[in-house]
Amino acid sequence: MTGELSTGLGLDRVLVKVDGTIIIDGITCAIPQNTVTALIGPNGAGKSTLLHTLAAALPLAEGRLWFNGSDLLAMPRRTRARMLALVEQDSSTELPLTVADVVALGRIPHQGAFGDISLADREIVGHALLAAGMQDFANRAITGLSGGERQRVLLARALAQEPRLLLLDEPTNHLDVSAQLTTLNLLRTLAESGVTVLAALHDLTLAAQYADHVIVLNHGSVVAAGPTAATLTAELIGTVYQVHADVIPHPRTGRGIIAFSPRE
Amino acid sequence: MLWFIVLSVVLITSVTVAVTIGPATITAPDVWGSIVHHLGLGANPLSPLRDSIVWELRLPRVLTAGAVGAGLAISGVVMQAITRNPLADPYLLGLSSGASLGAVAVLLLGSALLLPVAAFLGAALALALTLLLAGMFGRITPSRTVLAGIAVSALAAAITSLIIFWTVTGDSYREILGWLLGSLAGARWPEAGIACSAILVAGIPIMFSGRTLDAFAFGDTSAATLGVNVQRTRWIMLTVTALLTGAMVSVSGSIGFVGLVLPHAVRLIVGPRHRLLLPLSALVGASFLIWADTAARTFFDPRELPVGIVTAIIGAPVFAVLLARRVRS
Image (cartoon, rainbow over all chains, first blue to last red; front, side, top):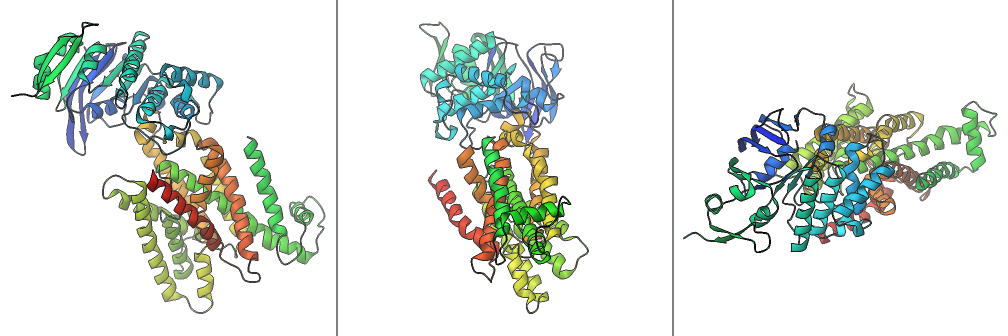
């Protein structure tokens, strides 16, 4: 399944250590091309560490990473930054940059070292703002925005990178219900237009509603992976999260809603 | 672009007007007449005495002030960007004290090293020590870095004082103290040469790194995912600031707050994007220090103040305001 011949994102025996401790313990799995894949698992399962490793922001101790046939870690940084974007959780700045300036940072890997923002760049920035629903905020200072608004600006910045692989760490954190649905719908649209999306999600119901595939992480290992409905079962959730779980159908979509109760 | 032209004109005017100010009456045409003459492009309109006041005394001093101001402002911008610390400045993080220690060691103990090299090594060592100390107790935060900088400054200053205490006698004590507080009184062509070379070698190349510095706005991870080689960039940038600070301290002593205050002032006008911030801070820093030094040498004429006192009187309240704003947010 993995390797240079496959499409999508492939992880081959990926091992990551942070301060000498193994956080990701030799994972092999595949994220299918042009789908939304949810990365789920309890706190400390290694979701953020894995996303940072995939973005080459943390070093890989062992293993290989493939994306559409190329070795992700062997390519030059700028080439990788034109192909891959990461939306971090709770990323902030003290600089009073405007929202448009922040989104324009996403054009850095596409510009020459001495280049400035071109007209074409501005157009892409405008599209990214529109897609993230932040077009009315373009001239506002990023430092004056709420956590949820900032989160959507950072999503727009990632879109401005025009990535083929989009990694998101808890993209719905801080968002109100409506903004959560808007963001996840946007991820679906992106996947349909040819972006491979991998998002760490805390909300299992949202994962069940929007993801094509899920990868379930626990203690640095993949405990289950596959199509959402078949993988995200009550038994699995119960085991992984140490709770009692029921999966009931959503009255409108028919997809799963996960209900929790404490274990006896 | 408009700002660039306006501030360049301000700088050229500042150089010209600052040279005319002083006990001997010199006019602006005199200044340019002397410059044109010494560039080999015309007869000298000035008497030899007045020409030497312009060419030997005032002009090199004003040019040194400009280059030092620009260098400190650039160092401040780069340090604030790379450490994501709005309080970063060569003076607060201990670089200036480290550079002073290096310079004093060479001046008084007669080491074989060249003065600017010793100052650079002192600055680099102090910076390394500050960052090491700040990182020793976990995450490097802006306030921790400033506290570590204070500790390193105090240590470097104590060793500097010790060296002075053991070696200096009589009048030279006053001279070395004046230099330590930051003074351009001794600036002639060699000093102007060192300061201007530092701007050419280290300052100008940094001007082209604006987008790279922008990429650090949201931290190291964010910069890495935008295609920046974070570790290499950090080392290059911090080495360059140590180089600039070392060169500037070796000609002027440690002048505080220029690197802290001017980037903030320029940010208020043109925003935080580094492509504009770097060159405009350099221009404003140059003009600012030229006027601070002009004030230092004329206010209490015939006595001179060390220019470091002038910049501290202006800079310390601004630092306090910045600190108060941080506490509130």
